[in-house]
Image (tube, rainbow, N blue to C red; front, side, top):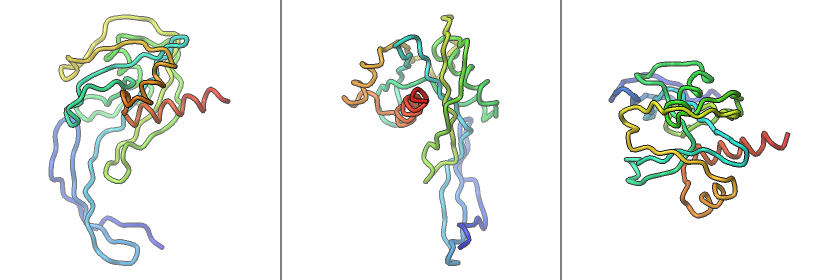
Length: 179
């Protein structure tokens, strides 16, 4: 059976971080339909590890109306497309001030494949050196702190860390460490 095919597409919204489009589609059985898609550039998520400590950032997440702890992550400004490792190093430095002596790719995550084309590469950052952060204007309320792994896991269990990308990235780290 053929996959869903795009018949037409129209952009319905655009800003510096994303576009939203509505696609006319043809399903495998030949019936027509529509699909709303949020297009965002691919992102990098970095797990900064210093011994038994994981460095996290906390910021206000407007759509949730809550401050949330998560791993440093993001996209390049202006919908730019950067190589994943370069983007990871940039996000780490920007959000935490940390510079990684070693950056190792752990895997790939799909943010919300039912509604978004965005994908993310997860990196392990080690051999960390501290420096000043270089946060974007939108990140002015951000703070960073290291947490022991057991506390990080307790924060997940207590619902204090709910960022799906951070939790999935941690699973990739655990699998990586089993090898």
